[in-house]
Length: 263
Image 1: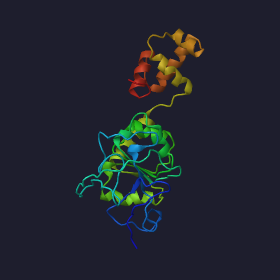
Image 2 (image 1 turned 30 degrees about the vertical axis):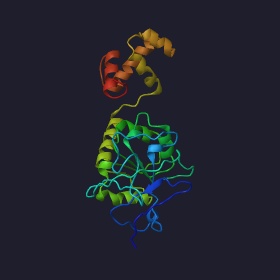
Image 3 (image 1 turned 60 degrees about the vertical axis):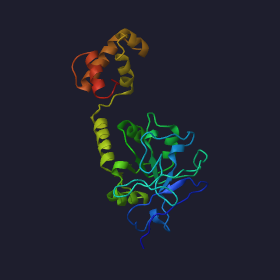
């Protein structure tokens, strides 16, 4: 028998709501006894943070509020926007064993660098990250951290067609969900990473020094404990790896174009 995810509390907290999709879900861990594991923390009060207004609020209110009994529903395609209701204040922090399947973020939590409290919460085994926007630099940070995310969606991707895929992730499917907006960001990030040459640790250490025009080859060599001639030899190897001809200036300009040095 089909069932709909209803409000699902968790141990030690009543400050979470559950996803209420527009279509019924089938059997599986996402719909045990009519209770979904799609728990959403009130992310405008992450551990160690003060509540702040999101300058670009996600649909349905501040931070990470989704539909559930007693809470306003998000504005989804084909649905009327409902008035927000005041939410009682609650203490900061999340339960020690809080492990959401779905984490929804407002844009104020997508800063650079990401808030340590956010990374801590993401490390507690959510399957799906739903964010208002996904910037390439944030994706790179999250993926590099080895967080156990199975899916990435943006608010722009959250429509009726996305619900079955979302529920598949909540049912512990190995499927990686990426809606059109998130997929575009992932594809751009993939092209950027694959297109970059791999530099050795020594070359990564050398590049920023080459970009400092106050340093001569001799000064760079003194910092690295190598001879000036060795610096020049490594510059030639870097030029070949970056696909350019010329000396130090050509290497620095190529490294900036390819994202290996800041512009």
